[in-house]
Length: 138
Figure 1 (cartoon, helix red, strand yellow):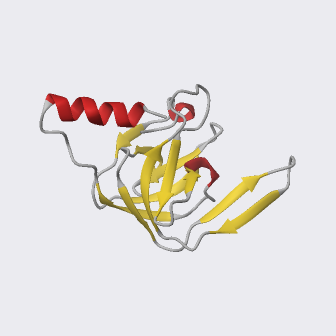
Figure 2 (cartoon, helix red, strand yellow):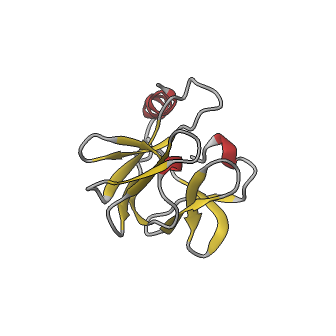
């Protein structure tokens, strides 16, 4: 998915093997940019597995201009969507193997990740409905 503030940015869906870079698109959020075009947002489905080239760094803006950079001891994540019932909030997030969930827009710019695996596609209408409920819950 692409967060609400990326709705007016050119985008395409993620594919297995994509090389992505975290980027500030100038819309109030960060997201994943395509390796072949830094202006192209790459929309990731919930459940997509990502491998970062290095441990992940997070910038938390606190107290106006003060920023705290935190390095996570993690380089693998699963894309999630959180707070779906709350409008005008960032929903795109990464869940790491230690259970920590980080909003995607909090990641520092310029981090590289590879799409390892996309979520399984539903085979039946019931599976599709269950997947839809999971994606929009929260």
